[in-house]
Length: 431
Image (cartoon, rainbow, N blue to C red; front, side, top):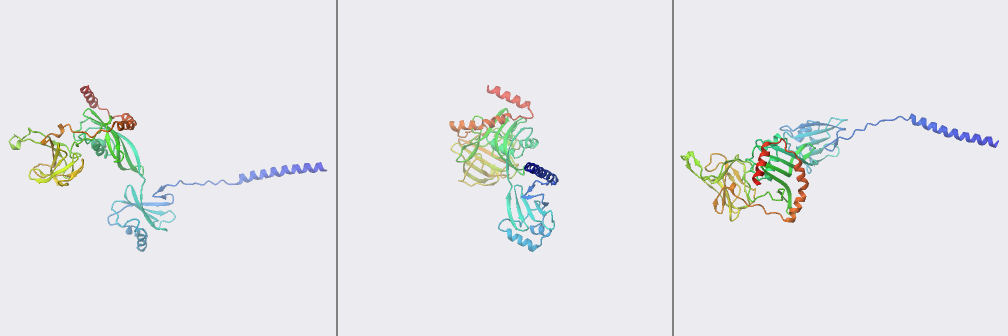
């Protein structure tokens, strides 16, 4: 009897366990699988676009913040309360015609907007929440700095080359600043070419805020190579300068020209003959740079203003004494910006191009004195900037090694037979 009972008990346990397992399996198979479609968040101005409908428009002449909201279902008393809530945080009272604004509507209700976004600039926007917790704030968009490379072949002007090469046209002015002491950009040769490594600032990944700086460049001009690498020789002063591949400073005591872009229309010439005066010799002791009226005129070197005046022949003019050896003068200004006794620095605006005095067109006549004698500035061997120390030279060469390799690896496209022959001629002259 006991044996029978034990056997029955044992088989009973097995049946219970197997029944539980079968029930569990049947329960598992009966549970329906629910697929949840979770949309990834698409954020703009901090809002999830899956939950909002955006209506984007441009400010029309005569539009105001109040009129825009009233036209979209928000009554003036509520507009007034909104303005009171945000008045110490942001201002939307004056909207600029042509600028963009967006209205955000909840997808479950489009009767009135929930938020207003105004974009007067590409790098920032003004956000106003119109419902629940009303507030306003100005938001600066994150700026991404991207390192880029470029190259170009001169067919006409540097600016046209930038445009044709698809490069940021601001590089024209940045390169002109880097090489201001070495290259006259109005005397470029067809076939001159360049390579450049630079950084550019972007918002929203595609909208450019402009060139930030040039890190390295090489410009082949008239058969000569001009390298340029940025370097900060004095970390305390924080001034960035440009040096060549041998650590020689590109900066000189004098700029090449008193205007950034202006062709030489008349050079220093002591034997110049003028038909108007019966073809008589009438020396021209200056160098004329043509430029539009209002173009800034720059001091070509540091110095003290010793004259800032007007004469019938010179028109408005400024004379600067740089030291006991050199002085410069700038004629025919529309207006002068500096006074006698004022210290000016290289590149500082001292006046604007005009047509005052004896002149047939807008230009600046640039005169140059050395040891109290007027000379041709283009024929002078002008002093260079103070060289860096030997230790700093080692630091510099180490710092530019990778940049120089990167720069040299950029291809010149298209190839120019003019450059190759000019470089070969230049090297044969040197050797």
